Every structure is written in structure tokens, then in C-alpha cells.
Image 1: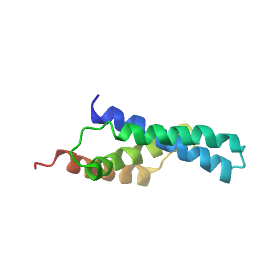
Image 2 (image 1 turned 120 degrees about the horizontal axis):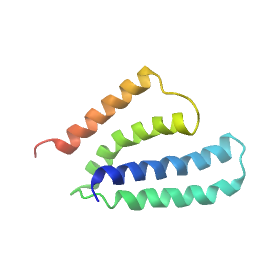
Image 3 (image 1 turned 30 degrees about the vertical axis):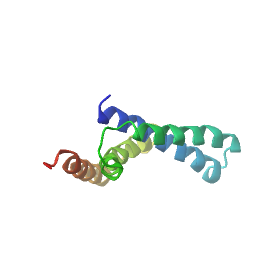
Image 4 (image 1 turned 135 degrees about the vertical axis):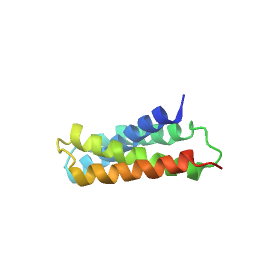
Length: 106
């Protein structure tokens, strides 16, 4: 499996896991949300270990750009709030930064 699908799945798991806690603590949802949230965060951590990279820090840094884009997709798809041009611009900058980290000649 290549890094991009893993990063996308990891971001979805991380965001879902964190959102479960957000829902419990900020949206007054049931504490039952904690169980699936913890499971999603464990899945996130496991998925990041599947990325073929010689250094964990570099894998995590590259992941950051995907995380930002996926967070904005979550904002739109789950929370019903459409990202504005500044959100999109910031996400594009993050993706460029991630590409520099991944594609730089070493």
C-alpha cells in the first residue's frame, strides 16, 4: 500500500477519534462516544506505522499536509460548514510543504 492511501485513512481515523471526544466534551454527547473514539485513535497510530519511511518524524511531517486537507473535508462533510478561500489556501500551502518533505532529493 502506498503512503497516500495510508495517510488518508490515518487522517480519517485520527479526526474521527478526536471528534468523538469533542462530541462528548463540547457537544454534550454520551460518554459512550469515548470507546469508538479510542479505537479510532489506536487505528490511526497503527496506520502511521505502515508508512514506508526511514524516519518516523519525516513520515509524520508529510502526514501533516494530508491531515489538514482531511480536516477541512470533515468540516464540510460532517459538520456541514463549507471551508472558505483562506481554509483552501492554507491547506494548499500545507500540501506543498508535505510534498517538499516527501519529494526532496536526498
